[in-house]
Length: 183
Image (cartoon, rainbow, N blue to C red; front, side, top):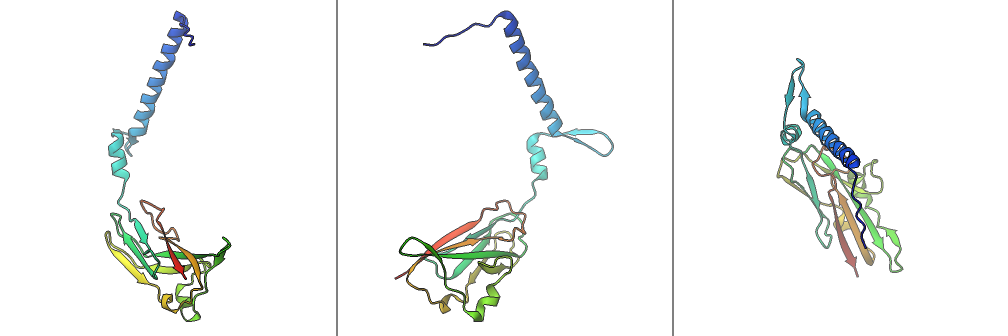
């Protein structure tokens, strides 16, 4: 059962005034938001879409990809609209044991460890990505991949583009995963 109460004329007037005040407040806030004060004190009013478009600069956007199953290749593509400065991709590896526990992966061979080590990411292999023009792709074959002795098990690899957050990207959540099962 619903009960509907009718408002007295005094409450209807107060409700109307509050609604009218709220509309005026929102309109004033929008006007202030879209106005820019120029150096000479004049006010220039722009529409919100124009203000957003004027402040939006083209940015790079690095997309990292790993093949499935993992074969030691990392591909990075700049899908953004601007040049990407040199950056870093990190590669993390986890081994899933038969009992469900997570173990570390085999260490890199000493002959290549220095090439892929970065003190900022001590638990990951790090690949240096050169400058990439908009639309350009960089593919890197991990030089240690063929040298690795992978014990039996299931491995998960996670690559993260611009891991050092040095790029002002349009999308900063560029992560790829892959797996490898060794019988």
